Image (cartoon, rainbow, N blue to C red; front, side, top):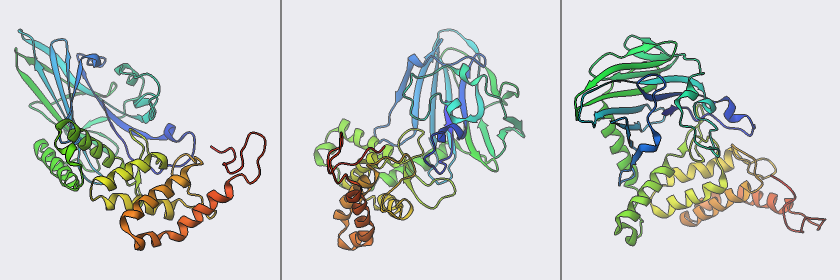
Length: 363
């Protein structure tokens, strides 16, 4: 399945992820309950790390090859391709299609965003969710959201079940492909290969910033691939929340919050590996200009952990060492104010169970 969602402005409320409304598409076979066998799935990784995601699945003698990527822009579109190949020595006819749903994201992806609980691969979890998508003028729409498709035939659509499908007959070794684009606003025709090439070129441009990878990593193909995947994964965490003019570096997966403790290593890695100042500096700006309270404490857009202020200071200090005194002076006074908050918050006198100099019980 593929989930389409916005990075909404986050806050500290416990029910934050209970409210997010997103849309999703789930490729199915046979009937609306016909899922692929996830145990027979192979993920295909590009050596250059560029996030054109691909996977291959073998179910009932049919090979399902799925590819997906997003356009490289603030309000991007998502593109996906499904190719079905008959790997049997006989002909077969099968219904192939996809479910469409708009619902709370925690219903589209069980236990999101943290997913500490067991994986839920069953397509039946979407069955109770009301279908709000409609077929309109050759494409599918739910309010501002749309899905357009490109294949050699028209797809049928069952409103009640929210499933688009067609019957496909394939001889041994034959294939059939459907390609889709998801976006918001007016539906736009698309050329899948052109969009794919455009996304790859945009990512190649970002990766060209890598100018400080150690020689021993560059000379080892596996190590180089690992670093390239690390960097593209990191860069995908940088987001402008919807309607906001500041940038955050999200925690991974479906998270919309920033954890300064984890962001420390993310920012440091980018600084060490290449020229990513225009990624790093907006995060430092956000800490001091959007998140710092009058007390000096830095309270991020997320859970108010007691260590956040020190983590933000650490990121600022390490980055300032690479930029020099002029940059350090930009936030010198704010940083000192944050330091004083830490100093003043420490326990002054030892009490039962709390040592002098440590923080009092905080989250």
